[in-house]
Amino acid sequence: MSTHGRRSRLRHFFLPDGHRVHIAASPQEANELKHSLSRKYPDQEFHLYIHGSPEHVEALRKAHSHHEQRQRTLREKQPEVFDEFENVRLELDALSTELHMLTEHGVQLDANFSKYGYSAYLRTHDSPDQSSAASLNGDHSTPHEKRDWEAERHKGTTIRLWQRPIVRQYFHKGLLWRASTPEEVASFELFLDLLYVGIIAVIGDRASEDPTGLGLLRFCVTFIPGWKLWTDISLITSWFDSGTVRLVTRW
Image 1: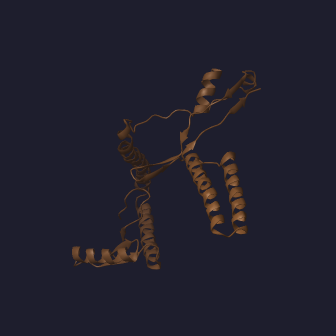
Image 2 (image 1 turned 120 degrees about the vertical axis):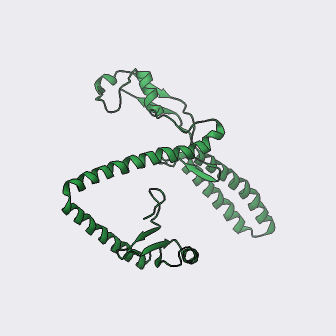
Image 3 (image 1 turned 90 degrees about the horizontal axis):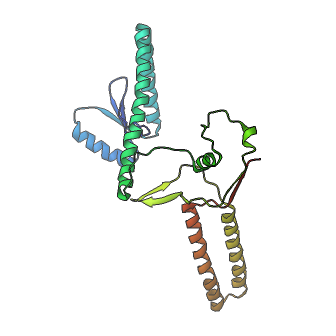
């Protein structure tokens, strides 16, 4: 069997009769793969299926049933060795996955961050809210420790007036990088959308009442600047997550 990465599709596997099954993503790729495999392995018989086709599913079921039977046979013959081998395999898979994530992800980040003088091997830390609150209140406990809420009620009031903008998405080297945290639409974004819809409704009604060249010109002069302003503001707000005034109160 052959895979490329943890989430990649299975490109080929073997049937119980020993024939190799190759998987193509599309009919075009199937034709190209058929010609290349025929030239490369002229004496070998193989099956070529399109990904997701009934033939592909049936071949997977046959191979799966065959390997399940082999697994049961091995467990019956050598149960102790089989269990130990399974534990070693699970540990090895977990370590290999973690190592793959660290090395491959680090290489990709280095390719992007080295341009700006940063390193991909970063250390994690608490969120700004937790770190700032801990520094102001003198609390350095971890989130897993039991906290004395009654004592914290008398530590005063914290007011956050400004928060550093956080980049939510950007283009770099032809790729769109987006934040992994869930995003919520801010109230001012909804207000801006409703205001833009209202402006379109008003100028659209006026243009329909005066269907002349002058009316069309008046509509364009009003619509184009408003549309440009609305798209620019929407784009900026989708790039940055800027926190407004916050009030954090502990009684």
